[in-house]
Amino acid sequence: MKNNLTIVPLTTSLGAEIRGVNLAELQLEDVADFVDLLNQHKVLFFPDQSLTVDQHVAFGALFGELQGHPHYENPITKHEQIFELAASHGGVADEWHSDISFKPSPALYSILKMVKCPAIGGDTLWTNPEAAYEALTPPLRALCDGLSALHTAEAHGRPEVMAVHPVVRVHPDTGKRSLFVNEHFTKRLVEMSIEESNYWLTYLTRWVGKTRFSVRYRWQAGTIAMWDNRCTQHKVLNDFAEERIIQRVTVMGDRPEGGQPKWPVYTSSLNASDTSRYDAPLLEYFAKASDSENN
Image (cartoon, rainbow, N blue to C red; front, top):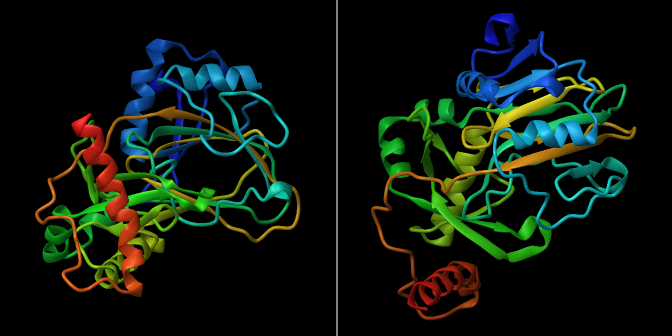
């Protein structure tokens, strides 16, 4: 299949626009070629597609188990395997994130259809956390390799939904390391105090979002984008006034793997105080994890 495609890389960091394929006609034997392209470019754009909802779902199902959004209901299209966002209903994801990173096994691939887009604005940016990791100095890479982070669904009004993942995730296909922390869902570096965590987490999430690691895509209605959540993050530019509607299918993934934490979970050695509340989610998570192991 790849021999029939026109592939245009969009930046040196990530992203490629692909023509010469009708996604509605893809078969299971084509999946390996798509995975190879994703491993190389991380996010793929397919202009001028006209997938129906059922075709969109069928395309996604070629890559694995699908799941609708765990917390939001669709405003327009009622389908359990489609996640829909409409700007008129508050659907603007304008912070860097990897989809559903608050779950023990987050999203693997996301496949988005632009249903309706503004004439101006509403572009989406993707960034490459593998390149961001490689660009860190060796001492900071070594620190990150030994840390883990707490991710929560607080942004969705569900702070009790939590998972802990390595700060540096190893891609199972390529073996490449990437920074697996994001400004939307990652709340705490597990082995650090709240003051230290705030400093380094802010630094790392801002670092990942630097322009040199990213691509910005201008949408047209009907375009399909597909990306690997294990080695990308994305966000929408909230700079538009007209309606913007997207539909997404989400291929659920594997449990993030990386190095083992080099230090224990942080617990304050000081007396309880007002700042103790910042440790509460961390302690709650590990208390539940301990209970689960003992039952």
